[in-house]
Length: 400
Image 1 (tube, rainbow, N blue to C red):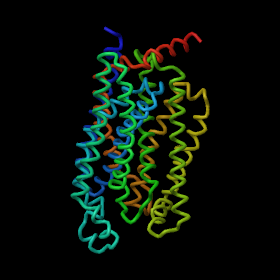
Image 2: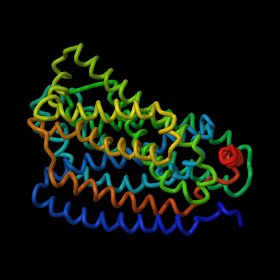
Image 3: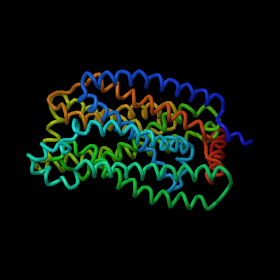
Image 4: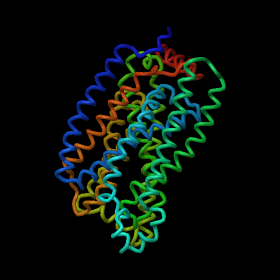
């Protein structure tokens, strides 16, 4: 048996511990959330929305990175491919966890309340699109596309492990090109539905792109942290070279800059346009302490990681890159919190105990399922054209 055919015992043990701890944390979080539903039902749904969007972003962010790697064929994605695939296989779980949001639609989305729509000309004009039945149909389509792409990518990856087939590379490349287009379209409309329609008078053509890049950052940072965690164990120890981490660091730097570019572009266009339907979105997020959160994001989500990721040494060090990625991973939640929470409490910045409870409840379940699904397949793909190249690069690095 090839040594890559099964999960080594140390790795399996680590994943099983992560799975158990995730379930314990989830149990505590769910218990607190259930209490929160009775104490403050409205706040529960608001907090749950932010937590759900964050963990959905982690899982969904793995999909475009996986598809991009299939399209380009770069060696940078070989060692984290199974981590990305495991992340996408959690999408059915997130489809189930979407159900609580349906129960809280009237607490979240003003366009779902007939009496509000009846007295709002703009909402009446948008009602052909923003209505509950069509909203549900679109959600089914989004998850159908995402889960379908994930299943196809994982099915073909498993098939590739059975035998060497040069035709698989062309299949993956076609899937990457087609899948990225579908991802872009579905995420755009899902962002409009689930985030932008929280304030239905507001509109931004850049905002869906900003959310999509944020999802990629969430998925990539998570994959980097897990890869660094497992890099000392076989088989990743044979494929993860300093150059591998360097390539991932460059990719991370690229998306950090794209996120900052889209964020600044949106601000500049809306502020210079000075439209009364658009300006209030930023006004709600620039007073009452929210401006401090915005400053934290500018400094810690862009300026600091940008400067750190310019260093070749930082990018080639697994621990240093993992530290940067972990910081950005946490800041992805801060960014989503800054985007969503002021919709409901713009007068002052502040958190609620349900914010933490929902985050750990959804996160604990997600981490447990991720750990469980990761240990069901070899940690590196078999019969991949880049496998021998990756192992050879590791040997060169060790003898260089």
